[in-house]
Length: 219
Image (cartoon, rainbow, N blue to C red; front, side, top):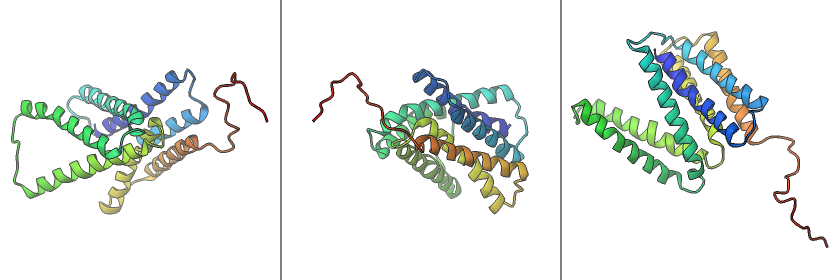
């Protein structure tokens, strides 16, 4: 169902990038990192579940596998984009990602068949909204954020997406959020705050000399 797909696709990326960081730096995730991921994923489950989207589709296994693939692709794109974002302008990266994505979808569209064009104004406005705001603007902001934060922290911060959707549905569509939904929102916000604390730890000691064997010159 929609709930499972949302939880899996959005939850895979933080887990995958946390494991990648642990392997890259040859260390286990510390307690703060573990608590941050647990809080984020628990909050994601509660927020998604509170939306009442628990219907099961006709092919649940295929749906879960597609959600895992989606989350893994997002994790790879964010991990690869982190070093690129620090040496390339966000607009350039967003343009390149958009072109690559469009080129990848053209064969799929051709295989799926038409229609390939439309004159429906509602469809055109919807396509513009999806392309310009939910993709181009969103990824430009993501790549801007990756210039100053880690990819693992960035994907945790993007979990505010289902939180925003739940709040907007409660405000504009009069959907009931429920107690567990509010708890889930609080957990996601706490997880995002936890990533900010990891990026800017308080009370840090002096910076270690990167080359302790270098001879020191005293005056």
